[in-house]
Length: 217
Image 1: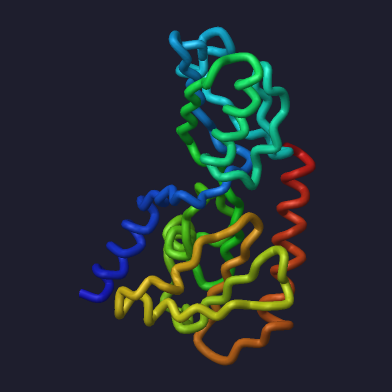
Image 2: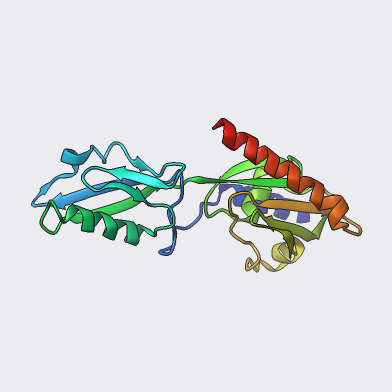
């Protein structure tokens, strides 16, 4: 029975879609549908945006006719909408600007240790620890589910300890943290963990993989 419950949990995790909150900030890879309306629909005069979404470039920018290059990465949808509206107001009277995210960009995370398919995975931004574990096939029977470590790329000296066992038993998902670009998830074996021996070797390897991929994109 426990096996079936765990299998279902990871199947659901791999299918789950992240919710777009109001404070979601744009990032490279996000695709935006932009519609501008004023007396007549002027979107087609700028670009056929209903058919061709605007993509946030790797450097975080979006180019829009008349407004120019916008540093969109880090803006919320509302902030980006206001920026566009202000820029277009120089050419149109009170333009009605609507911006929707049609597809979220991805984040690369590295899953190592006691999982069935360790490796680097690209997940949609907003996905969580459970989603990454689902993508990597779930944990092995040797995994110490009370000792899952999350390491952020911008703070490799600190490992956040996650009690996956508690999450699965209680359904309390407060520790099911959203993953960021370059995050490492490491599932230890049952037994004592040695950070220097068991985790540090994966840090340089993971970021080397990321650097190589970036240079070849």
